[in-house]
Length: 314
Image (tube, rainbow, N blue to C red; front, side):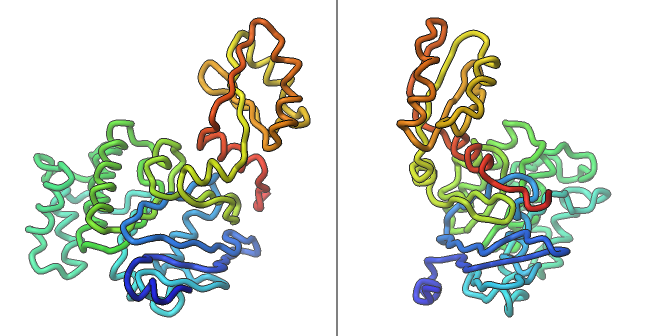
């Protein structure tokens, strides 16, 4: 660990070799990562890949089987109670009281955290998150987007230094997702560190750095540009008629590592540029098809990573 960086406050989270198993299955294996304070750090990966388990270890709710780590200067093994006092954790499932109003829920949370003026703090959160006019509405009657805002308001009431969000926008409409992410960027600009798990590529691209976890193993991490560059993918974009039949011919061809539909075209990618070009050469003479080289997208990279991952629960 770089203890000097932990001491001067530039690093919010640093872990080495974290491993966690349940019922003999390794859910997180030898995970190492560093997150800079004020950074939005995205976790991506298929269901069951270990994202939630990782977040729960970082906030002190789970103890790793092996490995070590520090969050906000506290040891995640021995100082989990101290960590909990400085972390906001928004779970996948809405966990506030359905039969209390927005205001009552926030006042209750403020009292749990021992804030001096719960009503004032609740109203500040309501104003910040655009919940004015809904203060008396029961939480159970809110749509997914409004529940999301309420849950975020409850998480940030005690002004945590670290915010953990576990797939916070699943099932939420695009407008609500965009507004949610605008607020996350405001919080990061104010100095809060945010770790968020998501399945959405557009959300991943809003993060300062991302990590891709598949079935317990960290396969890639870094900036968006760095992750794409590190994948060493070459990608052809092909448009034309009967692309499904073309895709069936291309899948499994030596030199082609990924074939994926993107709107009205296909992305055909490979990690060996020469082998890929040789594989598609015969098809490029087809006059009805238009082939163009394109820069690989983040989604191309993640599809390729996932195709190479092995489901450890299968």
